[in-house]
Length: 135
Image 1 (cartoon, rainbow, N blue to C red):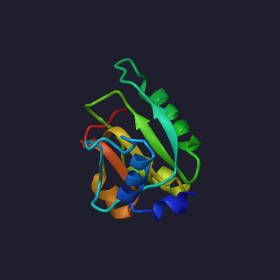
Image 2: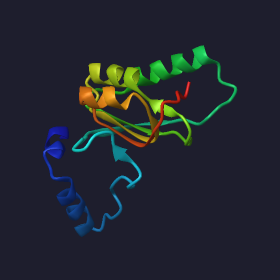
Image 3: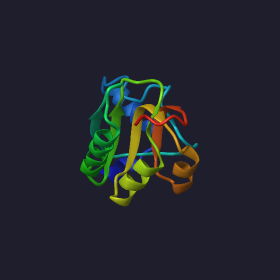
Image 4: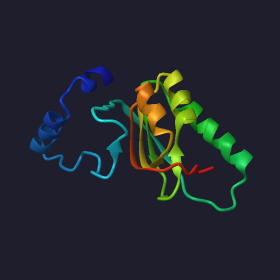
C-alpha cells in the first residue's frame, strides 16, 4: 500500500479526497519538508510528548531510544510535541529510524541536523528548525 501511495501525485490525492467530502486532510502549511521535493508515505506511528523541566537526562534518553525502536518498518513516525522551542528530532534519530526501514518522520515541532538528514535522503517534515536539543 505504501508504494502505491508514494507513486501518487499529492495534489491529485487531495482532489480525490475533497471530491469525497474529506477536506482538510493535508499537513498544515507550517509543517514543511527539510528539502524541496521530499515525499513520504506510510501508515502513521504516532508519538506524543510534552515538555518537562524535571526530566532526568539518562531516563529521557532511554525512553527516546525505546520509542525509536518501537516504530515499525514502512511506517511514518508522527510526533505531537506540544513544544515550540527545541528540536525533537535530529541526525541520530534519523539514522536509527532509517536503518530499520522506517519511511520517514513528520514532526509538529522542531528538527536539527537538517543538512545531514537531507543529504541522507531520509524524509522529514517539521514545523521549525533549531540547533537546540530537547533532551
